[in-house]
Image (cartoon, rainbow, N blue to C red):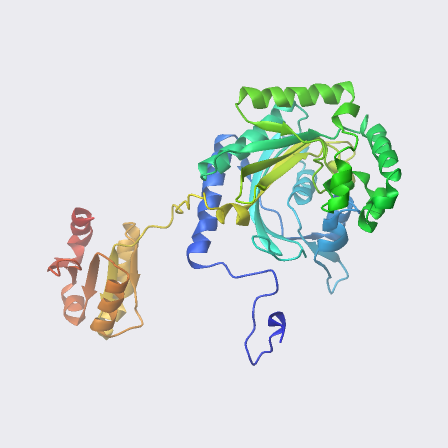
Length: 431
């Protein structure tokens, strides 16, 4: 029987390509987010969280047909009220929708955001790739200056380096703007038309809808054909050439290694000018893994209802891929403190007052583990020993009456009776 279609008799399982995140893996995600958020704040970004569901048109208008995301990967639904909604397949279009909806163009520009959360794409599940996965985004909306491109790239690089990545470099390209891209697309289209006989069906279709996507093709024949394809940089207008030159100068000043990749276009239709990917050191097969990427999307706002173009720049990390990397430092979330105390209670009178004792410890920021549902001293001590907890706090019937606890050193087995009023002072001495 197909595992993804288990009957209720066997028990339900998570949908294909989705999974439960718990235990150590949960803290890996949380630790990454805290580190990324910390870096982003230092560079001037502020948080935003957009809904997981948006009007379907937010994505069809913004990302465009001819992209795998819209054509194949979006999860869509129709509500009882007749609305057509989609689970977000990316963060950028919702961000610009929010920017326009809340009149952020009236704030000092650019407005800089970071956001983090689950993304949904009906993709083929494989190692490190899921249908529900997590992304961390950096965006700056409202400026066309080249220094903003450099700021986004630099912030992203610092986040990855703080997480343990080494040997990072940037693949970068410029695909021009509306002044010069038309001429480049015509040149590219003419090139592919000369080689129609070797183009696979999917790329022949892309030639009609979005020729730039052919440069991103994974088909071996097309990849070979792309080696001699015209490059966008050679077709840039003076303004785009100047912008791209300045971005590269910023990267050089920052000491960021980069390679101009003439076939880099990124997978979404809204990109203009700068596009880039951050790649890590090659794996054992010599393949350099992309850890994140993005680019400019100066014309996206008009597709989402703005009366004028709003320049913007952004990027995103695939968080699942980062935390599964061998180099990831496994940052411990700040809220997560390894408990040094195991709370043991014995008898109903003690159980009755146990939560009050635990609250005293909580207010003093002393985390504990406990098994309040258990009654046996031996069972509770066994759990403490198994978890290698250094100290136990024993609260029994006698202690409940006398407002005290027994603090036992699990290594030496020595113990001392301590009044509740003196407990915090005592614990500070042994911490």
